Image (cartoon, rainbow, N blue to C red; front, top):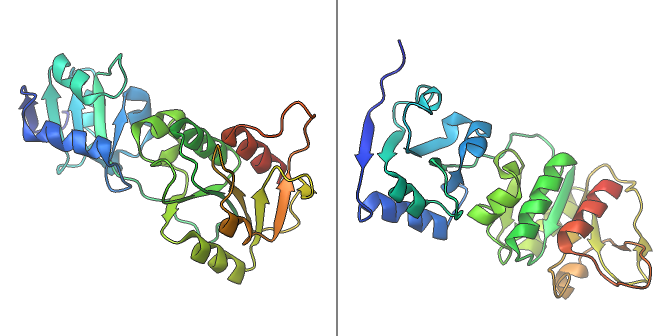
Length: 250
């Protein structure tokens, strides 16, 4: 016999629960952010789901039966779901989830994002970080790593990649240096070193914003500046592309 869930019917767009979801979409955090669609929800730990919104209850019975008793499950009409979804095509299932960083005794490789504001770039960098076993640390003025656009661009990698937002990035970098991390900075300065494999087991690489690069005070905190050798037709790359090259090469 399957688990019996307490299903809450939700039929009004003016219901306070709808406003709550919209507020989370506007200001997502590690404590509460929106996941849209069957794929992303299947990929997350069901224990991290805080509430669930479903159009077709029978279709997703396999999910509801695995949820803890304190998770609220809402049965919504299609027009309600279209209001809740960020994507124009909409989905038939979304959830509010929380993020818990993977437990680790030592973070060896870190990519630091300084003022990277494009959600697509941030999401792509997080996805690449997962592929190459990097943790991601962002300055406060980066795109929110839990926004719907970042989550989609990361292909769900936000769920199991170590992600943190540093209140004081210079203090964070100093803490890394105190622990004998090598700090690299990605730059277009041809006087810098050409990118090469790091000799340090523990290190961080800083990627700057799309338009301005790395802030001067953060750039000055780096132990070594590195650039990617290119032809003379361009002098810079997209932030996510540059980040991918650095993560692969270092």
